[in-house]
Image (cartoon, rainbow, N blue to C red):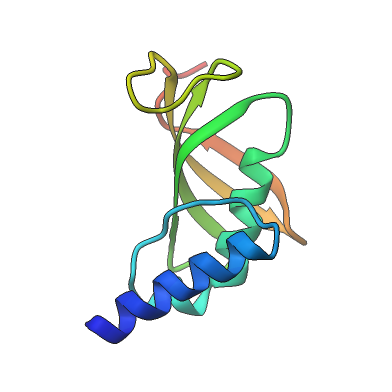
Length: 109
């Protein structure tokens, strides 16, 4: 267990130093196996004109699909104490880009 946590922390630290988007992921074997997919998803979610905070990315059994949970805050805001919008999405990626996105926190069409 300690090895898994240490490895997860090392991977997160390495991503931060490499200029990757900061995010949280579970310390599971599946998360370690899909680290590149999780990095791509985190970068794709954070890319754009919105400020994303408290980003969690979870792998699924599908090799191209993840769950992403995050808060969109006002520019200069933070997730703590913020009235930001919380999101839970299912993301399908291809080539590091989001090709399908289903926001589970929004009502139907």
